[in-house]
Image (cartoon, rainbow, N blue to C red; front, side):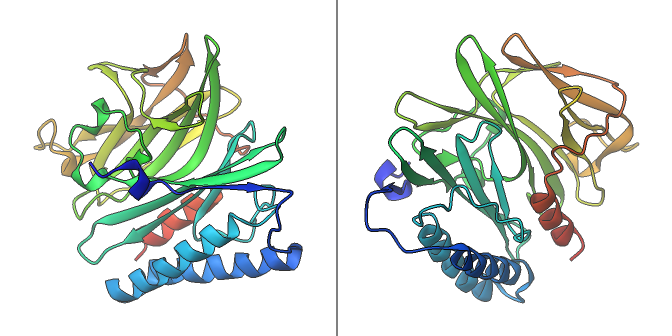
Length: 295
């Protein structure tokens, strides 16, 4: 495992420092840059062009996160990467995916924070280690390591004076299967993040995150219903002839399952009604997923 110093970039910015001058025109400029570069990453004809655009995007995001006011700007005109804010405004997540020619995916993410009391903003760069992690539903990641995913929703819950941020996401995985992922993000007293927690109560035991893997040939849905407070997703079953665990044959059935947060745990509930909610639609991440799936 590489050291924390190689993978975590934490830059502390105080509002009293001599920061870059900014107004809305600066943010409009960066919106255009982010949209253009992220689109190149998704549509470029080869990996070299994608890597070139990705390096520029990383530079732009890191510069943007230094600018006073960037935490509070909405970035509503950017839909080629996911930019979402936690419901309690504790952090903002900048998140995107780089599809590779070998049908694998690389993920990038930055957590941006703003402390009202000290009038400080800072960010932390996450390190995607999903390509060499096995049994990911039993692992907890720290030191900036993270199981790379493209996120659409952040759900804030509390239990026993501890705060949980549940991230709902998508992973293109490989040429045979796709994954839907529900992740747990927590912070320690030093604001250091930890990904994964043993709070998913499933039929086969307790997991640190929930991963649903299914055939690349089908689409599935997963979303958070804010009214009913359920994470709702398609129930998956192997096609006739497919064996349990052969996820390239898993497809949605005509029923839906869900997760509900009770007594500090996300608990599986099977065969639930479909709930519709427009309060959190994960527009940016879903647009990216749609573009990747239509290629």
